[in-house]
Image (tube, rainbow, N blue to C red; front, side):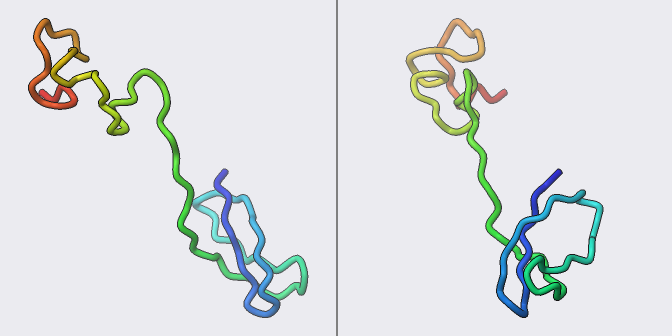
Length: 83
């Protein structure tokens, strides 16, 4: 379940709450018991790891002019081995 950040307009308290994306609950501040609003944040990023790091833009020598990344016998002309 996603974690959402809420902020109380009365006391300024910020807190997190887990609930379904389909759910729109009425949320009350745990400090002052007034209604809180969902606080829009920048979100969180994610990091791609593993053998297919060229998806994340780190091409290195894969799919460059030195090596192939898709099994061709000749080096790739278009990165990353676009067809």
